[in-house]
Length: 298
Image (cartoon, rainbow, N blue to C red; front, top):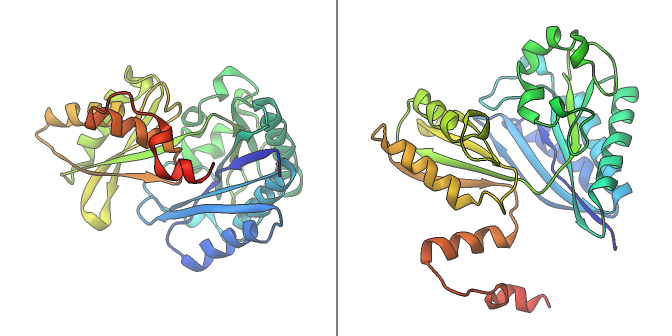
């Protein structure tokens, strides 16, 4: 296997284990695709799947996952803390080995066309696959969420890139694209006041004048009776995890609220964690070759 593409679909079910496993099984069934990870969050009511393989096999697995999600998830009954607009909410393709961003864009377009025509789900292209500047930002596309999209989709500027020009009542709409590896990172706060989390999120995210490569929203974690600042770091090389973490901590101090933990959703490149170790431990002249596991894989 020379060419490798990573795909990280997010679908709108994080509570029903039977449904989650049935959807993930569609990836397991595709020969030539390796399921790397999947995780679910009950409060977000959302699952994130990560798999890798050759471009054509990854595209095949992504379509099967979207199709199964459209069969098992009814968005009319979906409630969750995380913003969403469809049963399969977003499907990004990431170039990993011997694959260009342009190739991932083409995969996005092929998949989008197939989903639109065969499943009758409206599809929007985003990030590097976006058909116009206004559609690059996932949050901008998703604004209004599932409930608001029934009217939004009727506006000429929000005509889908593929599929019907009206909302799929059961499955909603799906966003597909190509992008740089993204880090989903959440910082937990020692309070149950979601307004504080939202205020911090507004301060640190780029759209609010904060960090250039950070998207953020405040979320209530009902099971633990706390809140979190839920972030997507869209370029971890230019805005590292530790930068986002420290800015959340600084803003939280304004409200007398402590940072009590954090979590990474899905997989992260080793360099992300090495960068954090270098920053917090003040390690000088550290080299990736000093990591035992990296030497064993040579």
